[in-house]
Image 1 (cartoon, one colour):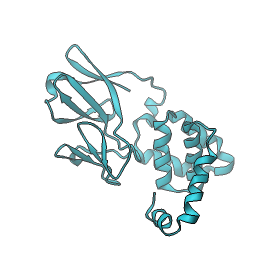
Image 2: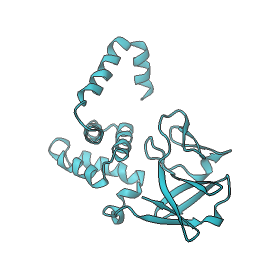
Image 3: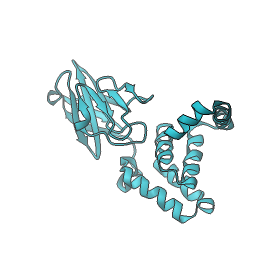
Image 4: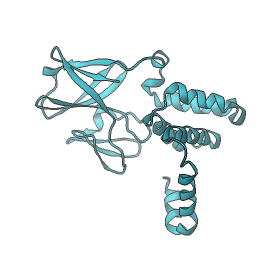
Length: 208
C-alpha cells in the first residue's frame, strides 16, 4: 500500500475502508489466479507500475503461467491498446523474471543440479546461480532449504550482498527475511519461495 493510501485509511477510515471491503467482496466467486489476472489488467490500464509489479507477482504465486499472463494482456488489447501492452512488457523485461525468458516459456518443471553436498557449508547461507536462477541455500546436518532469491513482494532479485548476519533484506522495499527459515520478519507478510529438493549421488538438486 502506498504512503498516500495508508494516510487516507487513517485520516478517513469511514470512506476508504468500505471501498477496500467492496474490492475484496467483488471477486468472491473468482479463484485467486483469475482475480489477480484481472488486477494485472487494471493496473496496466491505469499504468500503475508498483501495482502492476505487485499483482504480477501475486498472479505467478497463485498459479498463473507466463503464457497465461501474456494471453491476458493480449486479450485485453481492445481496451488497453498496444502502447499500454508494450509498457507492461517493458516492465516484465526489466524485472528479468526467469520464467518469462523466451527459452524457458515452454519449459516443463524439472530437477536442477545445484552443487555437491560437500560444497554446502553447515549452518551457513550459500548463494548459488543455477540454470538462469539465483538461489539461497541453507544446510543443517542432512536437511537443506533452497530459496528463490526473488522477493515475493514484487519479484525483485535480492543480491547476495544483501545478506548480513543470517538476514536478507530486499533492496527495493526492505522486506526482511530470516535466511535460514525463509520467514519474512519485517515490512512484509510472505516468506521466500522455497523449492523442493533431494539428494542424488551426493548432489543437491532442486525442482522448478
